[in-house]
Image (cartoon, rainbow, N blue to C red; front, side):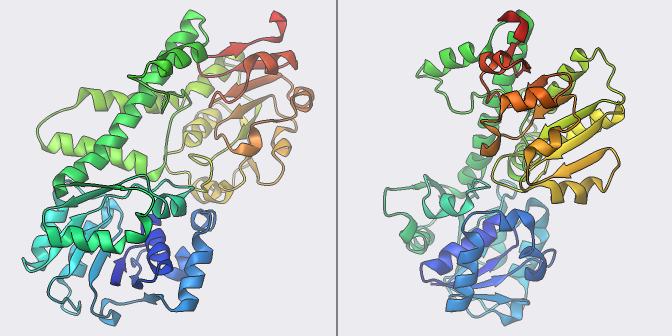
Length: 430
């Protein structure tokens, strides 16, 4: 099939690579905010497994062609939009461009996270002889290629048989193992995408509230988590307490859902509370550090492991580390931070500072001369550190585990004070 793809988001890059990989003829019009010369050098893209090699191979094979202007596009069977929420006007401009070659029966696929009802509005710009489909972006950053090529589900929002048939054919190569399409009306698909992330955020925030209560009551929250997860009505997914979530898509979807609620005239106290809890939890490790040093943080040096909003990505959008850094610097603390991927993005945001040193090779370098260690992002390289080495490096022998990946008892047995989210252990108790 002939596909005109528009956008520079991760979803656009992934769709371009995957669709060209299985033989479709893809013409890729990048958004003017991120042309290929810029996008191809982005750390977050180069860190995505398998994406860049597939892009390069498709360009070599000729199944993928980069274009700079809409008038360079050939007549397409499908127009695929993969834009950010702030680029709605760009989508409208494309579909109304007089140079856009549109044939009878072209199918518009909206893979962007736009407001509910936007696919219908965009369809109206193309007139009735065409079809439109809402195909919400469900990629997982850090494993975008696997998410697209081996999907667990596609929310297929479609109100006519022709559009559904074309999309099924377009993605047939990725629907061989099992039926992954969940057909529904366009508006339902758009709202479902937002509702899913709202529910996941609610579970995380609820578990974080329970972790805070467990701290107050002297209960190890891991026992509570296991008991809750064993209840078949609840399950274990997204029941891991932590120091807050971030990321461009998750955060944007929550704000988008809140906006949908507000514009519909239905205020959601629950959703507001979920977002408030998450922002509050981003300060959890700081508050534990503050309590340990009784508010005397000026001149202290804190090692931080992890800046990315989650493992496997170089992005720091809405990441908990940003809140932590602001709080630490406000109290006169110095930070030595290690992250294997995100230090460049961090410096682009905060600049070069005397109270921030970053490392991307050896995580133990961040701990040299540090009083305490904060684990913020659970990269696999952090899961099994040399605890005796850390005990000799950290002057206060304090480990603050923002993801509860360590065993408190074992850490304490190595002579360190452990503070997690709803978990703790001291060496003196052994």
